[in-house]
Amino acid sequence: MTTTSATANRLLSADHLIRATGPFAILAGLIFAGIQPIHPPDFVSSVTTTPWAVIISLKFAMCLFFIVGTAGLYFRQMSRAGWLGLTAFILFALSWWLQTGYVFAELFLLPPLAPVSPEFVDSLLGIVNQHPGRLDIGAMGAVYGVLSVLYLAGGILLGIATVRAGVLPKVPSIVLALAALLTPAAALLPHEFQRYAAIPMGLAFVWLGFALWFPRKSIARTSRARTAVAAA
Image (cartoon, rainbow, N blue to C red; front, side, top):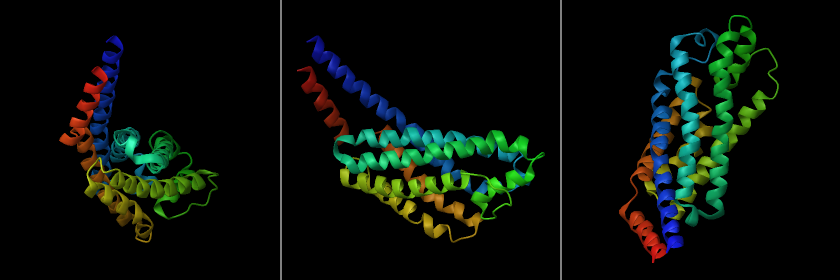
């Protein structure tokens, strides 16, 4: 009896942990969509300003929230998402992990470097703003290219895997995949307009975050059934 009770408690605890990732996904999506219209220009003159400190701080938190939210999406549908879901989770979460490193540099390294080495700061920001600087920034450009590919592939696969699993809502899952798919096309636009391509991705994550936080009744019934079987 003790064993079955412990198993039931573990199932309930796992469900609560997965639900707890919902607010992280919601916050990640809200920040991702919300900061795009007000993001400071990616130029040296911006990095020492208060808006830069505020927005980049939000971006840093957002990257971590995306990792947690993506984990929640995967574990909610793990039994039905298969290898495609696992691959999508790894790729998409890894893209945000790498992005966290770049945003860390934007937040903590670039402001003090701007007055003493503006050319380096300009070259690093050139990765994003499509105005390459004169200095060699080593592997940073390649790393940013890798994370862009991971974001593209991971987003598409995560959307497809979520639709196939049929556990979470299909509409935001499709939007997620399409938003990632359109990323290369957005790269053809001027940098100030590229940002708006992030808004559909952010809104899709908000929707999926609510689905994690407040799972559908069918999912809740399945969870209770598993708990009842374990306790029998």
